[in-house]
Amino acid sequence: MKTVIVGAGISGLTIAEGILSNDVKQEIVVIERENSPGGLARTFHKDGFDFDIGPHRFHTFNKDVDAYLQNILADCFVQISRKSSVHMAGKYRSWPLTMASVMGLPFPVIWKSFLDLFNKPDIKEIKSFSDFIRSRYGNNLYDFFFSGYTRKFTGISAEELHVDWAQAGVNRAVIDKRVKADSLGSLVKGILLPKPVETKFYYPSHGGIQTFCDKQCERIQAAGGKILLNTSVKELSVVNNTVNGIVLENGEIIKADKVYWSAPITVLYPECDLKFINTLIANVALKSEVPQNDYQWCYFGHSDLIFSRLTIPRHFRADCVPSGRDSVIAEITCNSETDFWKDPEIIRERLIHDLTSVGAIKEEDILFIDWQRIPETYPVYTLNYKDQLASIKLPEGLTLTGRSGSFWYNNMDHSIDQALSIVKGSKFKKDFWNER
Image 1: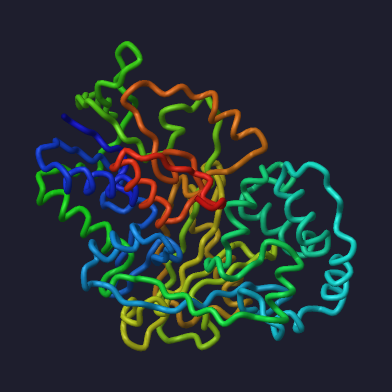
Image 2: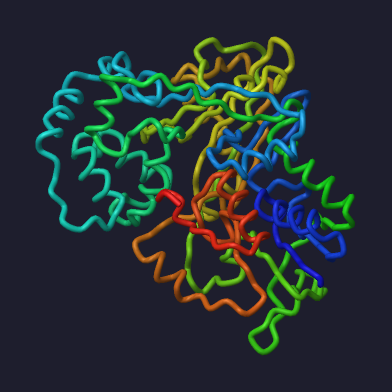
């Protein structure tokens, strides 16, 4: 049986490796449009600096996924703690929020949020991201942080986003399910009566996060599988509503009995008008360490700042930068029609100004800025996205998988879980924000 997997990201590679580990007689071809595997978990290397596509590290409560991670990485990983922040009212504040960080907010924000504990909007039907946030956190926090950050990040208003955007993003923002932040009340309780939580993550002991995918590729190729890089797929080859292969951009047809699609679903079904966010990455190399950058990653909601998140690679592993150096990864979300997506250099000076204004860099310390365009990084859950997905009728022999393929705002561990379930032939629920 011949199987084609489109997309060499975490999900596609896990499916390929899983199939071959059970049956080396299977003929597997993995097709990837980029020049390296990993998808959204790629790593860029330049002059001794390692830059992941934003903050990537493995964490899971799923025993099967944990076993798979350790099996692939073997002894090639380190365990790291978590330290994340949010930049609000001009200062860095730890996340999950602590009493000290909250008390540092402007008094009107604290007072209005306190009043919201007793006067939250009574919204009968929760349909949008705005409904969800205001009903759980109150109008004040919604206006102060969530509304502006959401428009900045997605390019559309919170009223136009489906409630699933909140379910997928906000509810799991604290990572550890032992910490509750699903309402203003639980957030306040966590601030007043914090539970000591020490969440550990896996990170490769050399290279960046792509090392995990490289090891998957080694196993796939050792078992006889093929990985075709720099190869784009145009469409499916379908006969009598059954997939019999894929058509490459150059017109070549690769026959297949089964196709797993983890590339963007919009390639196959552009008429459904599903939308993705693109991310422009600015990998900034610095001459010396910046003490203020004591977080692994930090969210920036202020509309005047061009980036929405910063990542500090040396806090994932010290040798991600040369000794004594530092680096910052700035993420700027946009769409493909945005001017700076086409020419990032036009925002160079603004980026430097904004990074300097939050203390992330000193301009004179910059060694280089390496721009990377990462298309289709996040699926956007508009109010009618479920109807758009439901309108897609899949031919026999096609399975959608991964963040881009199944239009699913997930994490790497969820993609692995989904892929392992597919290999086993078991059912998998995409709405991971509910307990399985």
